[in-house]
Each structure stands twice: as structure tokens, then as C-alpha cells.
Image (tube, rainbow over all chains, first blue to last red; front, side, top):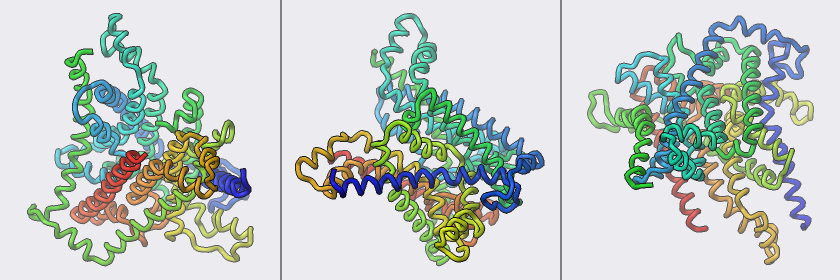
Length: 266
Length: 278
């Protein structure tokens, strides 16, 4: 290895470690601020305290927002897993033209500007007379979650040996039963990764949800942004810390079961 | 398996396809249609002529494109060495990089944008650190500047740049640079003639993804840069939620949609061409 090589390698390592700090900095700062006794985000905090966690109990509508977000994320992910399983089997095993185009179409909502989708759905739901905010949100969140599920399932089924399903059928299982007992357990890592990222995407969505909410149906990100505009105190950091904890636990479980490297291949 | 069975299995795509067609494609199509009609319902491009004739709207579109371009560039410049290092990293180091990428990626944009709005305050962490290091004497204004917006957005979208580049680098034969060296290639030649061309599909995918997200981001600018310096996405939200000017909002949405779609189509065309060359 020449001197230039060594220099470039060292430089790359310095930059990469800088990137690790850069990526984790916002999360670390949020956690630190949430335990501060101060109102003004000074770091290091003058004293440690739980006052912003106690303040959460006085935040109006926080619990409702959390429950609504969890409800939407769970139901839309479940619906996407069902629709996505059927569609991915159809693409992997069907023999019709345009399967590649169909796969691209199913993943394409990921690349669309969220705000534009929200506007389009708002006008469409109004047009067909759907005025219920909860149902509008749920219908929209399936569009948010489906691409995540489709992306991982299409990749996984591309390399799955469907002879296993056919074998189960020969042994007397019905097709749906063979899918449930053979295909899904075999593709469990893909289901876990796809489902996890779909769930998180629904929990976090702002740009689509903002057009579909009403006064009674505010999701967690919408509530949080509203708090930031009305009274931006560190209790928002306390909510954020809760979400960071949730994501950390979810990832730790996923890393344990499928491995970190599998997680990024979705 | 008989062809008849395979055809029937193909029908399994129908529920998902119908769902996306009805709740996703049809609304977008109707939105496009609406933006090309005037108040009486006649076909017209008047709204677009008005938008592009208005210096304010033109400057908003220019700012949106400029910021998206800078975000993509910054993300690419710092993602590249990270992906190179990750390819050769093992064990605990690799886990550290993966956690640093996946954990922020699985957190909502509201959480991260809020953190950056704290970091950029005049009495915030960045100003304090710079003053401690004696790099500046007095706090500099960061919040409400385009620089802050570019840094914050690059931070949020960085994982989507690192991962595709890392994925293609991982598939490369790690002995290729050494083979090139044996054949007499210097470090610059190895980098520009071997590593870079092979990584291009990942770079194209990452850039397309980051650009299309940056051009349409809404939460990050509204928390970091505020109402004073609008972007197209903020204009769209305003025209629907506050101004009640749906015609303007629809037309701006169409412009944003066309930008996003052309980035996606352009990048997949480029990726296909690059793939064919190898």
C-alpha cells in the first residue's frame, strides 16, 4: 500500500466517523434536552430533571394523538401485508405481460412528493363524498405502507423456491394454507423488515395526513408540529425521546432476529 | 405448474392493483386534470403562465431547486467516503455505521427537524461549540438561513444516499482495485477508472431519491427556515390550508409532481444505460 493510499484511507475513516457523529447528533441532543431543568435548551443543562416528562401529562390531546397514530399504523400495515402478499405472489408466479411495470407502480408512491399525494387525496375524497377524517387517513396510510411491504416482499419472493409451496399442495394443503404455513414462515425476515418500516413510515407521516385530519383526528406528528408552533418547550423533546426509545427497541429486536445487514437490504 | 394455474395466480395482483389505482393513481390523475382547467372548466394553461410570469413564484421555484441540488450534492460528498469505509469495515465498526444509519432513518422527520431547530439556535449547541473552539467571537445567525436548511435536510436524507452506494460497492469484487494496481494503475486511476464507474448505479439511485425527497420536503423548511423564505411545498400547503386558493395549489402540485416524476424516469433511464454498459 502506498503513502497516498494510506492517506486517502485515513481521510475516509475520519469523514465516516464524522458522519456517524453528524447522524446521531440530533438524537443525542434531543435526549439531553428532554432531561434538562431549563426552559431554553442550554447545553449542558444547568440541572437534570424530569419536569418535561411530567409536563407531558398536561399536554392536551397528546394521548389521543398517540393512540390514533398507533391505530392507523397497525391497521394500515396489516392491510398492506395482506394486499402485498397476494400481489407479490401474483407478480412472482403469474404469467402475464407488464409484471415489471406493475412492480414499479406498486413501489412508486415512495418516490412521489407526499404533499402532492395529500392534496390529490383530499380533493378525491371530497369529490366522492368521503368526509370522515378517520377513514380518509386509514385509506391514505395503506398507500403509505404498501410500497414498503411490496419492496421487501418482491425482493424476497424473487429468490424464494415456490416448489416448496407446490410440495405442500401435493401433500394436501390448500393454496392459502400453504402460503400461511410454508411461504410466510420461510420469508419471516422479509415480513419483519417490510412490516417494521411500513409501520414506522405510517407513524411518522406528516405531509399526507395534514390534509386529511380534522379537529378530532390529529396524528402524533401533526400534534407535535402544532405544539412546536404554539409553545415550543422541551416537553416536545420528551415526546421525541419516547419515539427514539421506541425505534431503538424495535431495531434491537429486528437486529436480533434478522440481523442489521438484512434490515438495510429491504 | 400448468399455464392455466399460473394465469389464475396472476389474478392475485388485482386487489392491490385496484386499491392503488383507485386511492393513489386516480386522485393524482384528477389533480393533473384540474390544474389544466380554469374556473369555468375549460382546458387552459393560464394558471401555469401566471405562475411562471410571477417573479415571486419564479424565485420560490428557483430556491426549491437550488436547495434540493445543494442537499443532494452535500449528501453525496459525505456519503461516498462513508460507503467506502463501510465496505471494508467489519464486526463492531460495521454495526456502529449501520446503527448510525438505520436508527435515524426509522425516526420521524418531525423529531429530527425539531432537533436541528434547537441545534441552530443562536444560543444553541453549534454556536456554543464554535465559540468554545474560538472559531467565532459572537453567535452567528444559523436558524432561518438556507445554509441551515441544506445541512438539516442533508442530515435527514443522508441514509438514502449511503445505502444504495454501499449496496453496489458491496457487490463489487474487492480484489478489483488490487488487480488494477497489478496492471500498473495508480491510486487516481484505480479510483476514477475502476471504483467510481462500478458504483455509478448506486450513486444515480441515491441522488434521484435524495433529490426527489428534498425538492418536496415540507416539515424541515417550515421548522428551520420559516415562512419568510418559502419553498414550493410550503406554498402548496399554504394555498390549501390557509389561502384557500386551490387552483394555485393544484398547479404548484403539478409542477412538483412533474419534477419528481422526471427525476425518477430520468434516473431509471440512466441506471438502465449504465447497467447495459457493464
